[in-house]
Image 1: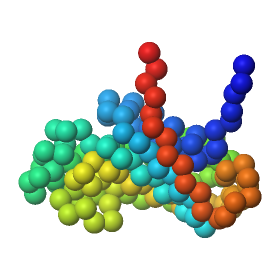
Image 2 (image 1 turned 90 degrees about the vertical axis):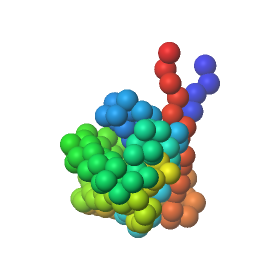
Image 3 (image 1 turned 135 degrees about the vertical axis):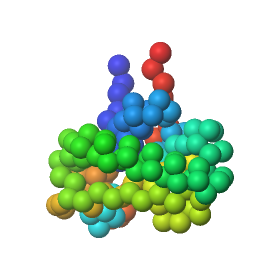
Image 4 (image 1 turned 45 degrees about the vertical axis):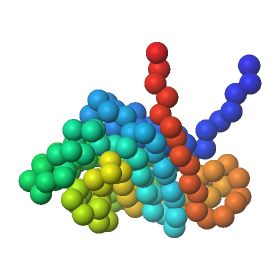
Length: 149
């Protein structure tokens, strides 16, 4: 049987998508992972449910969505850190998320349902290790979650 090995970016994208679905019951439409100079940026596209998107259209609702996703992020941070370290072999030094669901500013959750998470790694990870080849210093991978049946 022919197989292929996923890059670290693809593995992180899949792990983040799986954890998001476990936390919320809603898998993101796609996950993009970018590593640059020790900073790992995870963007979850379509992370908000239609109900959360509708709720985010009012300032009070946007505040509720913001607080809900901030709490989810904080409560799941250990699991996400462990997965990133397991996959990359490098510990996460810092992790941050902020949400402004109403304006779409530099945030974790946008009103469109896009979620961005940024992780500052505590050590160096070479581009060769990250993507299995020596191409550039930035690496991006997008995973489209697959449902198991």
